Structure formats: structure tokens, C-alpha cells
Image 1 (cartoon, rainbow, N blue to C red):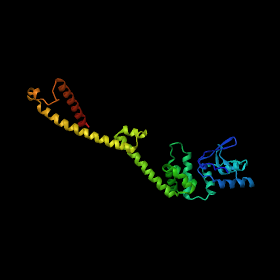
Image 2: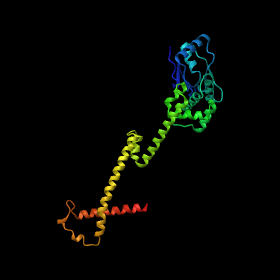
Image 3: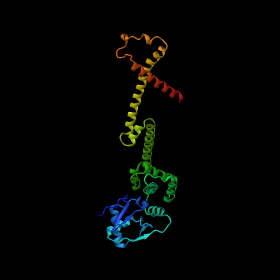
Image 4: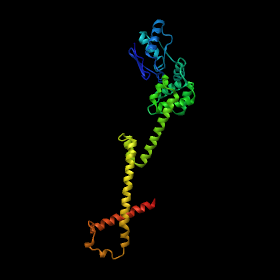
Length: 289
């Protein structure tokens, strides 16, 4: 017994021809082995009642199960070409009519078909949701739920279509996943504002977002510590220098009383003057902001 063709397989090889499946047709699940065999037996005994419908490009709009059943039965399949104005709507309509599906399943099939037809990274927006609602005959709200599941919990799509999982439960999971994704995006944006280097590492996959924030916190704490040390140091050194200006302090300097490791030389004075000049410039820039 042949296994059913996977519902996400976009093509089928028939003899020397590869038949491409229209995205709307490919969104519907295939029959299981037993059902396919029963259909194959019926076609072999009574012939193919309905042709396999193709569009102008030769893509299969309707009849994937009949095509597979004909192959199992060893019968040459019969084809016809759809000449209507809207192949997407036709495919959804004929498949929905012959299946006992809930509104949630129908909405999910329409959303899946839409996602399969989208360019990579594309988005069809509100207009597409409204169009899907009209074509599938379900509410815009249901379509919106289905699109949310497709985008944020894609592993649940086929479970909803098969009836193994209800739309409401899948939508709840998708909403939670969306909330986490939105939170992660916001955290990454904040990290980029505070530390672009770490944000780039997250984007490149070198470090996780949580670990990046831990490192960011450590960096911030170290930066705070350095600011405290530097501020205390400057507060100890600079005011006495300012007070010594215009006094006889310098002339009273005596090396025998100098602090260990703090001898004053011409080079030290020049470096101190350069440091104070840099400090004054930093103050001017700070006050100009």
C-alpha cells in the first residue's frame, strides 16, 4: 500500500511530468492510506468521476487525492483546465464543500494557503485577511487568529487543520509566543541603544539575549565603579591644586617629605597640566549640552 503524499509537498511526479500544486490546494491535508486505497479501488472499478483541475500554468488546483489514487490504481488520470477568474477562491470553495470542516479548520487552511503563496518575509496585511475571509466564508476574526498561529506557532497549523487541536487553544499559544517575541524585540532594541556591540553579538548568534543582558549589567556595574573611583580621586587631587595657585606652596616643596612613589618631577608636572587641560575641555563639553 502506498503512503499518502505529504500535504506540504508542493509537487508530484507523474510519469515523466512534474505537477506543481497550487498553494491553496496544498494547504488541505491528504487522505490517509486506507482512504486513498478505497478511492483508488473505486476509480479502478468505476472510473474517475471528476477530472483533476489545473490552472493556466499547469498547477494542480483540485484533485491531489484523485491523482495519487489513479497512480495507486494504475489508471491514467483525467485532467481539465480551470477557466474562471479566481483560482484561489475556486480551490478553497471546492475543497471546503466536500469536507466536514469546522470554521477554525477552514480559517487555518486559508491562512496556510496564503502563507505558502507569500514571498519570503512578506506580509499580506489587512487587505489579504479580508480577502481570505470572503473567499473562505469565515469571519475576519477567525482569519486573524489563524494568521497569528501561522506566524507565531507554525508547528500547530497542521494540528488545527487535522482537527487534533482546536483553533482557540492554538491561538492562545500563538498569542503567548507573539508576546514573548515582541518582548524580545523590545529588549533587543533597548540593548542596542545601550550597548550596540552586545546587540550585534545577539543578532549574529554569538550570545543569547538573556546572557547579553547579564553582561550588560556587569559592564554597567563596572562602569559605575570606575566613575566612583575616578570622581573620588579627582576630588582629592584637583581642589588642593586649585588652592595652591598663587601661593608659596610650590617653593616649599621638599623631596625629603614626599610621599612614597609620588615624587614630583618636570615630566609629572607636564602630564598633570595635560590632564587638567583635558579635564577642562570635558567640562566645557558637558556644560554646552
